[in-house]
Image (cartoon, rainbow, N blue to C red; front, side):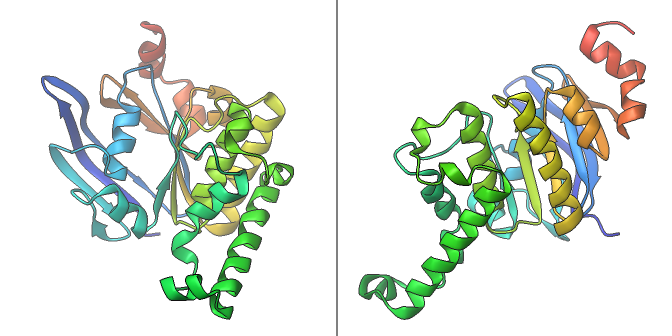
Length: 254
C-alpha cells in the first residue's frame, strides 16, 4: 500500500536547540500510529512541522505523493491534514454545533449573494452541513451538547467537540495531540473505540500524541518513541513496551 505520509530526515531547530533531529517514518491509510516520549522529546514540534506550524531546517514531508514542507498551515489543511491542539481551539461564545459548522464552512456550496439572498441552494447546503455536524456529535455521544456554548463545557467535552470539528470534512489524515486529556475513563474507552472505527471503516490515517500509555498500547498499530528529538523506537506496541531504549527514555535506566 502506498504511504499516506512520508517524513524523511526532518530536523527542527530553535536557536541552538535541536528539537527534532533527523526523524523519519511513514504512515499508511487506515493506520493508527502513536508518538510517545518524555516531556520535551520533540513530539509536538514534529506535529507542528507536519502541519506547517514549525519551520523545518532539513528533510522532506510528502503527503499523498506531494511535498508539503514550506506550505502554510492553511494550505496543508486544505490538502487534507487536520489536527487538534493540546490547549484546544474552540470559539467559546459559539455552541458545540456552531463550532463544528466552522470546520465545515469550506464544504458549504454557496456564494456570497446566495447566502445574502437566502437562495434555495445556500439553504440546502446549510441544512446538509448541519445534519452532518449533528451526526458527528452523535458519533462521539455528545449530541445532547449541540446547543451548549463551548465555554460552558468541561475540558473533556471540549476536546470531543474539537475532534468532531477536525473530522467534519472527512480528512485522509488526522493529527490528534493528546486527545484523552481531561476525559473520564468511560469517555476515554469510547474515544478508543471511535479511533479504531474511523481508521478501519473510513481508511483514515491517524497520528496521535498521547501520555495515556494504556490507550496508546490498546489503539495503536505502531508506536514511535522520541527522546531528545531523536527516534529511539518504531515498532508494534508489544515490542515497544519491552524495548530497553524506551525504558531508558522514560525511567533513565533499563
